[in-house]
Image (cartoon, rainbow, N blue to C red):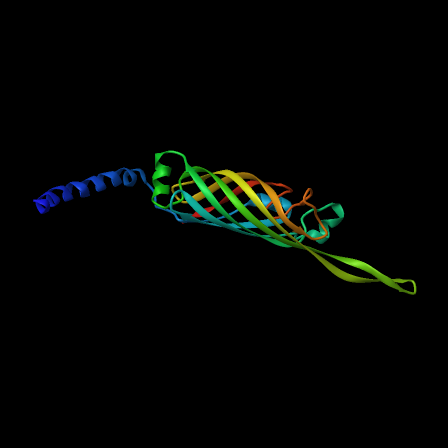
Length: 216
């Protein structure tokens, strides 16, 4: 009897699972995209560049890693008050998505980056920067003797980033964002916790910009 009931209800269970999955498959009208590579062109105005890689995770989330370089024209711009010193920057962030619309929710449930969605991202940032100066060491007659000295600074901070991400059918990604940085560790002669300067990742305590690129 039990075997007979199992044979009767098994097809019904399988049919129910299939029907439960059909709405998502019907809503998804573009390829699922699990990776994205973007750049932030606004960092150009801070004499820097920033490259971002994003990998979609289950449950409406993604892991995001950024790598930046900065201060390409520090020596030429130093005399006019440039604030971005030579250096490198890297971040690791975990994005929590809030997909907008049934289609984006279905894509996120399938493990893809959503087509449209808001997000909040806790982010850990590390910036290493340096500057070189000619330091006076003495005189040789009328000649002033200097020695080239390079000073370094390390900065670790925690940021909370908010934004909205758009992805076209063909994979073009457009992401405006903004956030706030909280200094955790600052060692060096250039900045203080109240004055963080600027880098490829932040402008003082603020982070803002627009990322553009492609998902695949």
